[in-house]
Length: 240
Image 1 (cartoon, rainbow, N blue to C red):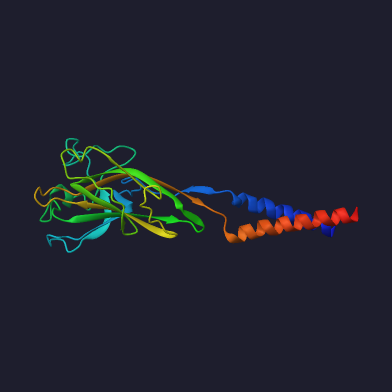
Image 2 (image 1 turned 90 degrees about the vertical axis):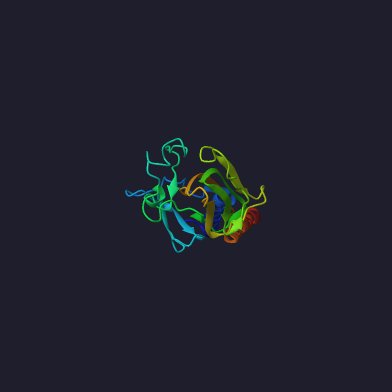
């Protein structure tokens, strides 16, 4: 059997090893999805929802899950929207309505908010959160919001905006980090032009990382372990 001194030493070493494993910063992925990637068999994007203020009062503040744009049908013909690829795809409020079919065809004149969520773990140092990516919108990318706060990255309504990416970064370095522990809401606000009566669409490629720091209990465990090791060492010296 282990002597009491050896047992204490073993426990102390174990606590130090355990604490040290968490003492180093731990960077992890925020598991954000590009648009059009996490979809079901019906083309519904499971990671992005949409809502609208419906300023032309046709659809009574419609909301729901975003869906993939229909390949090979306007505006997904290549001459209008940048063609989909394996990295990301265009999403819309409704693939049928968005093609101009029916009484509500071409959902013009409203602000559409496309939203995705992600979680930040406990004991994360919020200043280490970095979210970066690029986006395209039809007609105009008004703003990006994190937990309802404006990030300030817009896409002007200009020629060929449906074919070119605009980069963005959310971080403390940019002065626009509104991250919080727990669930976070990342939103992309798109204004659909009333004058041109065109479709609404969004395409996003995004990734994010954060760094967890040791919780107070871990530091306490580490200090306690060091204390026990010190006591065992002194006891051995006295015995010798």
